[in-house]
Image (cartoon, rainbow, N blue to C red; front, top):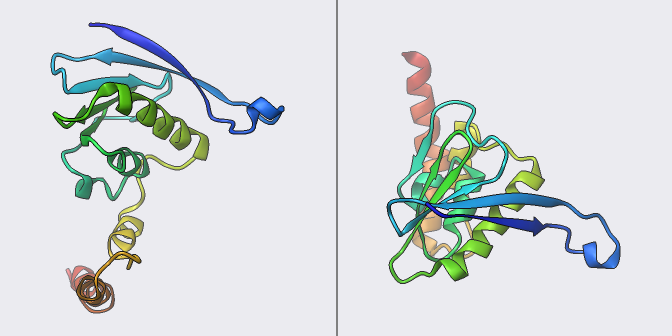
Length: 158
């Protein structure tokens, strides 16, 4: 298995003498040529692992969600000290690696938690976006104002 390091500089203004942050991220090949392991040199999961087989499963994780925002990402997996990204057949690692490095770097610089609480994730899932059609916006509004409160009431009764 080949390992290749990459130093990233997240300070956009570093070349102008501003704050500079660097992070050493190593990559390691896997037995699957469509998957690549990224080791940020920092813990990823405190315990266990997390698998995101598609973008819709990533709503509860800001890092997974940002990785799925990269065109060509098809699966994300978190381990104790690594993130494995699987790409589509038509995507190339030459394009994806810098984007993935940047997403990991931005995540660790942001100080965000790896996972949102379930209530925050659910609220994000039904947030109405500008690109939603009128029908989708109406469905999301119904889910948020009628369905979710009814389900929460049922859970309280149990």
